[in-house]
Image (cartoon, rainbow, N blue to C red; front, top):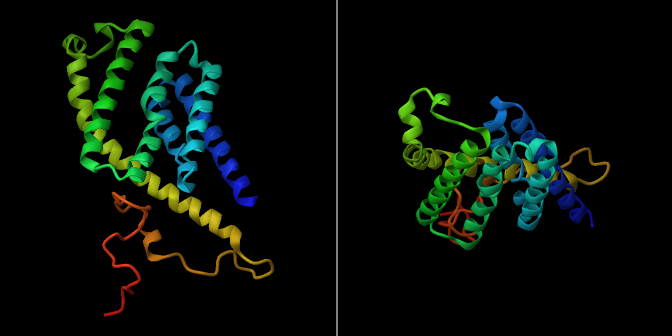
Length: 227
């Protein structure tokens, strides 16, 4: 029962924090990129406990609530979060669950990102009335889609790398918080056992198969220190 309550609370907190940052991003122009990034990071909270449905429901609730905080009049600002940024952490989690080849997944996600950015640019121009005068050079408007395709394809590689490591950091933080609830009453210690060595490597690579943090190359049952 306690574990279920913690999981529900985790999804609710993820939704609340994502809504706050996305609402700020929609209504404060220079915070829009911050809203996308931090909104995606907070939706990682349920994924840290394997709650993919909880993360998806938090994403849906975030999108709906953001419509009430300026997302209707400025839908073009919310659109990139709906079609890409809010779903990206969940897709990464599903990639890990099903052991999809990382390079194949990267190509597919890269194409997804570029397509989402092209659609967002088209919507942005249509709703915000953007023209050549809004860009530093007129030729940039004429070649906007080509620039988005080339620049987006390169930028996404770094973005995906960063978000995967953010997920590791979120996993570690949530595991520490959840583990702290397991201490005995009156013991004065929330968690007497030291964390495993793998947990300390919060910025390590995701394993293509299995759970995060597992050393897939280690033989089962074999002590690392043993000969």
